[in-house]
Figure 1 (tube, rainbow, N blue to C red):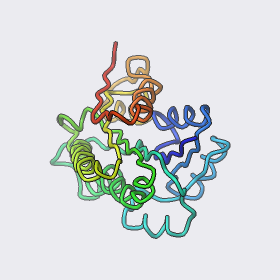
Figure 2 (cartoon, one colour):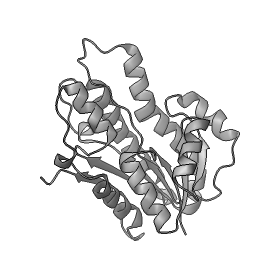
Figure 3 (cartoon, rainbow, N blue to C red):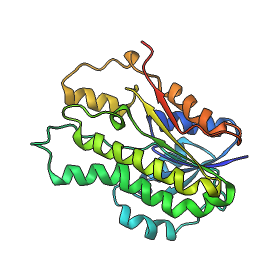
Length: 229
């Protein structure tokens, strides 16, 4: 049985991965932003463990996790959570920039740093759910795309640094996926949202778990997933 810590397990891609891991009997730890959310996740995923720590406040993660019991062994750290706020560069405030970069880049970097000892011991795997915006930026996507370009750099550097420790690192770049975040994006874009047009979260979950389950003689470093319709 493998042990996994997952962010973003409450909905979308993260929820699909969480269900799959529990269904196959793996040990699952879910990061929640506060105690109330932790109770909701515990009720939604019987048998899962919860930890409380807000990715939007990276400087407090060490303190928060230091007051909780962490898994002794960790086979994978799955960074699935993320936030998005569209807007033109001329309109985006420092508050939006800081919140986006904290949740999408600095928070994942700090969580990874804190859990690297367990990942090194198990020769574990770090997976970053990125985005097509992490490969190319479009108008009104500057803050989100910048955070995802940074996340790509984080993953590449981490892979180079931890290869000798046996830690694998994968970045998955999903296209538009039928999630609550995508519904919010369509609302901000002023477009009608049709979930059937976009990737099913289960398909992205399959891509993530394919990378995690790959035999140890190989490593998927980058994986792009695009809508098939």
